[in-house]
Length: 187
Image (cartoon, rainbow, N blue to C red; front, top):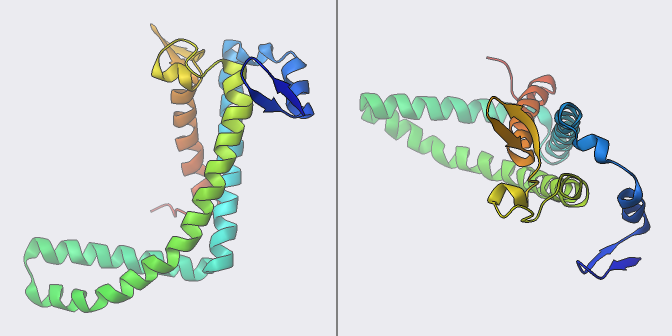
């Protein structure tokens, strides 16, 4: 392990090789935008696959989908009964509330496990690879420079920083992969 005395960070040999490699071509604007799109797609795809595997292991995919459908129906019925002021329907739905709460509790464990794995994966990729490559950690003094201050795309008059563009790509890729893997059906 090599210690970088300037920043106090410990880097393994892999990270040292990455620092020595000339990756500056990845920060040039059309390449940087496509590169970030690929990174967002890979991370969200891996995240969605992990999510599906964790849900399948702890709950079962079919049971999970049935519970989601039942909870959505309960929510819609509750809102409709509340809007119309139907006391009979609200009382009937109150009896079903404990069953819905139990379903939500059963879904929490896989959700938290998947969230923990996703956050670790995200921060590793962000801290180890993207931030050093695109500059960051208060390089320019602004909040966005902490997450990579170099613009990776431009719209007329504005440069879009790494973090903002990653959020846009990540949201798009996540929605796409949820539909492909069946986690979010097209309605």
